[in-house]
Length: 165
Image (cartoon, rainbow, N blue to C red; front, side):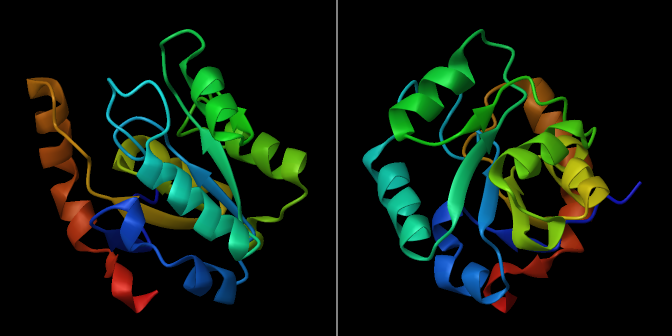
């Protein structure tokens, strides 16, 4: 059970697409809720759209890999953003990661995951053998989420700083 992310960033906007491409990354799997946008945000923001465009300019495909339990949420968001997706991905199990890579013709060495949770995004990414990029959650929201993020703190602290990517 490998829970430590490779790198820690404050937000997705601190991830440099050119540096990812320099590492050979061509596919970036992204958690949706609390990574790209808040749970309440229904459509891609201007900032998310600009970040996706910056990734594309470097030849990196953005792919939403979500565990959202809201019916159709990942599909609607991904379609509005114009990216492929997998909803109900089953993270931390590696099946969703493997299916996403197969759909996009990418190998683990060409793939990274960006997410805000240790026990789903990072654990699953490490199991799948992809580069793991952790971001701080956009908002805590509930007491349960705050508690969960508190439990994750020791693992977050062991990640390399994002600027080292």
